[in-house]
Length: 255
Image (tube, rainbow, N blue to C red; front, side):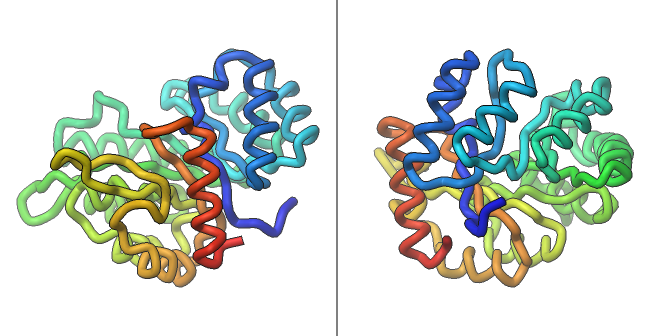
């Protein structure tokens, strides 16, 4: 294990995780930056045993994953086995499947299925989290789809993996949402937002305009375990982006 709370979400470098050899090299580069933990996401075909060996060879911890919804529905025993192999306690789904994106009723159908997936994972000693984007903040009368999702799901079985950028993109307050998820959010996603040509653009943490003192204070209050850097779109080499975010977060007091 590690005393560090910083992790690299490997979706950031997904173009470099398509083969086992590329995954091994990516693990090495991420560890050289200083990260001691990763989130596994968007890997090409690779044997779980090889992933375990690569993690161990590079002194890395897998703190959480993104698993496709079809696997969570149809292949959950194997998902559980993989996470036990990797000593990874947390499982997340990266987005709302399209079949549930038809407003409040779709969210409620998803909640019913997510509660059951989360219950089975909890029975195996794991957690299940939902990673948001900004479409969940669409208004539905006097509420939003995001409100429905987290007010009507069972907090024992459906946790949050809040993406602070997408919360802000959706017009909501990241720090307020983090506080709302107190003791319900093992992992938070961090990336920054800046403006280029009058357009919102993703940036390295600390290189944009988001209120990081408020967000990080809220994360501490909410008992977040892991702070995962994820930058879907980088304006430079994605490994350099991961390094900039890492250095800036260290300077902000995270270890």
